[in-house]
Image 1 (tube, one colour):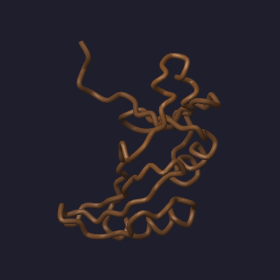
Image 2 (tube, one colour):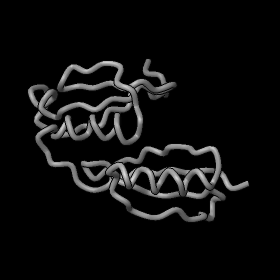
Image 3 (cartoon, rainbow, N blue to C red):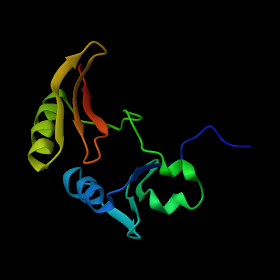
Image 4 (cartoon, helix red, strand yellow):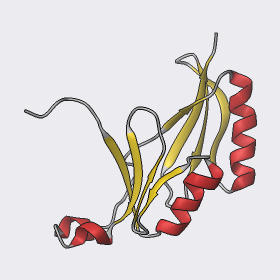
Length: 129
């Protein structure tokens, strides 16, 4: 039986080089395995990768469909609320697209939103104590 546990998160892309550089150079993920059309990054816990859509098109025509809308979000923790502000400035400086500046949220976190080169919106956050 399938276990209710996530083992791998893969982001599908049509621009592997731009995405690889973003997750490696902007977000700081070290590359564990680079097969040119599939890149897996070092990450504790769940495995994390990016992959060209072309890899899967021969298995299913579903991969030919254009993705639309915000389908998922990755959330990156910071040590404290000040780190959210500093990290946001640094990420934008390195090439992330700013979506929403840091703000205290009603769920007791300071949160900011940015996008990767494919337009996937992610967040950085810290608990407000």
